[in-house]
Image (tube, rainbow, N blue to C red):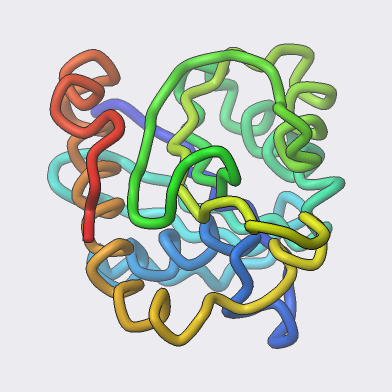
Length: 191
């Protein structure tokens, strides 16, 4: 049975719970609930849960280092489990994708995302699988304030469908691999 480490990026604490930047945490919380894998063990500079779901062994990890240092947490988990970087799936928010859409890719740059920058720096490579959850870009105003603000009421109403869609995608990704999942989900509107 293959093991996958699935990292959801976000910032810890209730202040950030419903912010756009916490899309990765939100997906992981939903996956945790559906898979029955509690994310409660304090380890790897984060909180973690391990279990089997849909025939796959999953390690779910929410770094508690704040976004800009989240690479440390993922690197600790990868090294401890002696897994190749290809077995790491990172779920994160993406400004360049409209809200409700999702894209997948392996490798690439950080596009200004400090969590991805930290991951690439700590892992020595950016060649991990990314599940990019679209949050849209502000029409005007500061990007930092935008990502650190809560989703709008309209977005919140659609969020459960979006999270369920991303969980379905992650399940397929863990089971079937990137090429097949990309062909079905890449740039798909999930709401």
